[in-house]
Image (cartoon, rainbow, N blue to C red; front, top):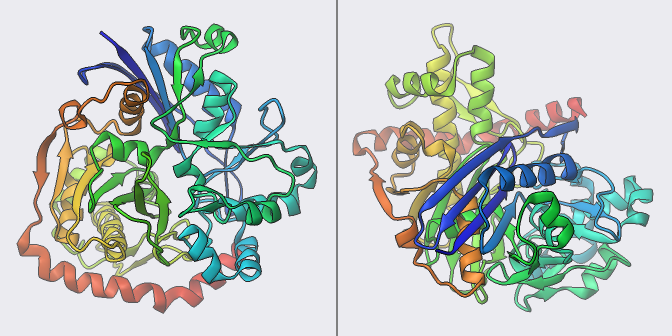
Length: 483
């Protein structure tokens, strides 16, 4: 029976699965890793010590001799590398890294907001790679002078496995303003100005084979030399593929360290408060939203008060809707969509001495749910089909709160492993198989909203939407103090 290996590098852990061609998961493995915060607003990964170390360990733990390998990883990120693909500095992560705010403003003024939106479909923000390149050129010119490759987590793994310098169209479409959404190609004129002299990777689709495992990579990983490796993609899009989010209006809600939403579309669109991007297959398009936090806020509550997520979530589930009169803005790391404000800050309002950890944990879950609702309002689909994925689906408390706050049901698939399963499926597709993802990963349940809480959550959402404008000036002042 053919088997397929999927490897995904996440923000706080990497995961792998070995899957048979009927969708049976034959083996799973996970590796926790560290994320570096070297300065306020700076978030980084060590590509060798995290990405490659994790990949090698996962491949060896999973074992077997897969017929193809699929990879994905966090993104969009900026990893400058030399001509041999060796990292020149730690990778600058996606929108949670807000160091390039000045460069976002400068490039927007230079090219014009309307032109950037027309070409790339998305305003520049902390998510975009172009401003991060501009930051690197300004602050680390010696690194820039040595840079010969622009890599991301997935393309770094592909290069180490195959020697190929290639990036998928989806990831490239998040390299604003370097990519032209309609042309499905690099925007050469803008790229030449933002990244002068840099040879950009060739473009291909995640459903294509990038190359084969080299002898050196085979010796290091234990994979068979010549094994096909897919082009790879960003983790959230591999995760969307793993649960069949492929029809117009299908929307993945990913519960993780950060919250991420991907909605499929049948045509390119321009969004001022979302990210427009190519999908994983030729001719496909997506709109996406990403909150700068999610589970990171509940981890903060856990670390402050002690205990563990399981017991705190259970206790929060006993707290009535409204969290005992608490309301939380989850902007603990700034916010990405839909406000694009790296200097937004978290707010917890309504506190009294009678509030304890269960109420605060519940307020965190509800605040994140209000953030999901805020983002869903910006999506083009009026009646989206939500599919819940990610580690936060465990236990059901969080997903129930999100359905209650949004008023929308959520399908829950059998396997919420996420991106690694999607990677294995994409590897099957890339090598000529076309398995039915609904058979690989069927829906096994649906979370229905509780109508009894709707009126309260509607009222709370109005106050949630008003809280950011009311506190923005103070938040910006306090963010400035940290700098």
